[in-house]
Length: 413
View 1 (cartoon, helix red, strand yellow):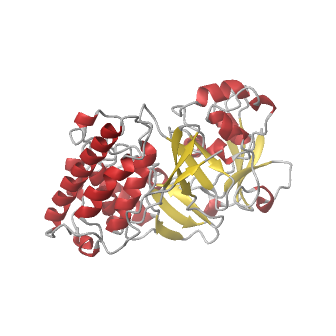
View 2 (cartoon, helix red, strand yellow):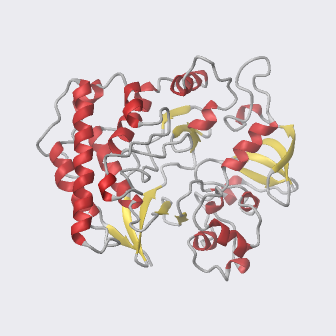
View 3 (cartoon, helix red, strand yellow):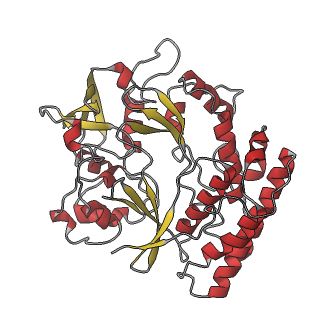
């Protein structure tokens, strides 16, 4: 099929996709170089600015639901598709994370008439990905932003305004939704911009809920797209490369934001901060950078898949080093911690109560013990970070009464 890749109402490049797997087969006329997606063209050297087929296809695939997504195979079988990338063409590749989309080559569609920020969308794909209505999806409406949602955990968009992302947990205890809440509260106490999360309950399963932090005038550019198109220096670490490439793209000073992310990930033992799990926000109209995106997708942390006796023992990192004990050394300037409001009482008093809400774990004493061990490990790591900064951990409760308010549980029907 032949399309024009659009950026809002700006034609960017003509391209074709293969019917059998939805991948890009070739591209044609480039209408606007300036609006090409970040990371799809060569970023340096004599070919700087040249659109590369492999980079464009990599960007395209990254928009699709990954093969690792829980429930994806059953959903694709029910729909009658071979690959999740095929879903993109069924909804014009529209997303709630940016303003790129594809317009059929011979049609005169307008972005304002099709975008998912303003216009309704089908809930059928989301239901199918959640294992609901598998027998009806073949007759359903497949035009949905869920076709372009990344990540391995079960998730779907709800039609509230602003749009709400509902995301599930994994394993027997479904801890990720509770981890999202705890991580966002710790980040708030440290003054680190982070997406706030709440908890939802649907058919005896827990989910996290968060508002979309992207609007119809902004877009999220993952850190991986910032790196693409640049050569990797032999003597350059990935950390140094990201700082250099961000500067080359005109984003400005980002070291402080990256280091704050490193500190938060150390405190919560985040195992999955890969380069699609953080990024930057760009103005979709002026193409100007607005800065580092608030942190999101923090659920795969806090020993979510471990046994209770392993809390604090496992320490796997992903972003720049293999362990958090090594990665925290990259954060050199911790002076910003002098203005934090998070106290030791906030951690030790409130966090256990949040995990005690998780009735998936039927035994209350186990829930309380889990939360207590998590809190003690966070407190120990917090003490370590503050010692490195030369500061003392505040002991008394913070002045921000809302910091560790118990999260509400929304019952979804």
